Image (cartoon, rainbow, N blue to C red; front, side, top):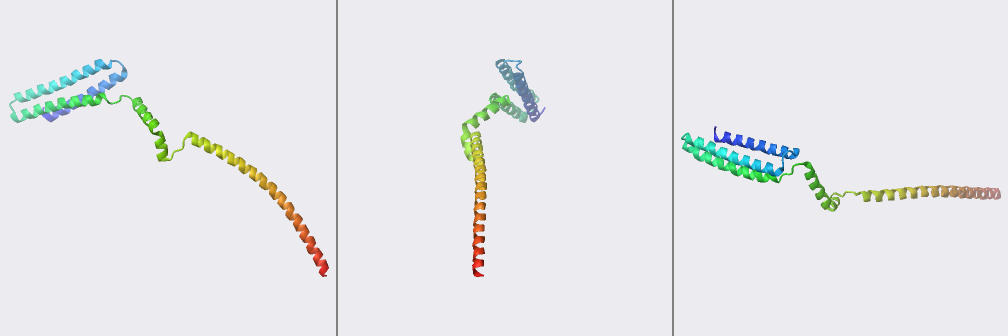
Length: 175
């Protein structure tokens, strides 16, 4: 097995171990402290297996491959430790991520509302109250305008009668 093939197999195996870890942790079948220690043991076994594979590769007598395998085994063990450190901090469920997003939005809500010109419930409620007041005022104004129009039409009719009367008198005087 060439070093690159060995590395690919080890990475695949590490990914399977990580998936099993999350599955077991989510199912609640294993306590996280026992699971972590067993995963850490598996990581150590992987690095030991890489070392053993390197030793087997060295025993074939290829000197140029000897340094490559030992370098690969060291890199794989370093990567497994780095990966394990990163995997521990990854949130397991979306509830944790949703909670963090909610916290961020609560902390930054005033700034987001200001930046994006958003309306809050209180803004909408205030606008609804103002709209209902304006619509009542418009209805009152429409009623008052109709009353004024009726009164104004009566006055115009009265003025028109008087004007017609005056014109009629003027025509009779001229004739």
